[in-house]
Image (tube, rainbow, N blue to C red; front, side):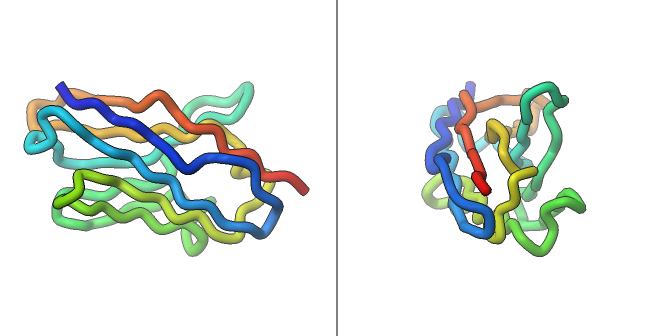
Length: 116
């Protein structure tokens, strides 16, 4: 099992920045890809950014150039640096980890609210 705990959400003004963190524990050696998803009220959960164990990254078109995903494998921590935030970025952000056995793990979510 893998446990994921997010932190760093909050209230920020349009154009501001936030950094989310996700601390992993448990069978961390089994983790391959990690990612951030978000879910806005009334919308489906969507993939924001993803990073492989080797560091290859993927970004949704809506955040490319504004968000940066990174991971510190020594600290078992995933990050999401969010710059130039817009009101459309308001959502609950979830950390996700996929293990080598194909299991999916999720954090409890952290609220990001961007106010104009």
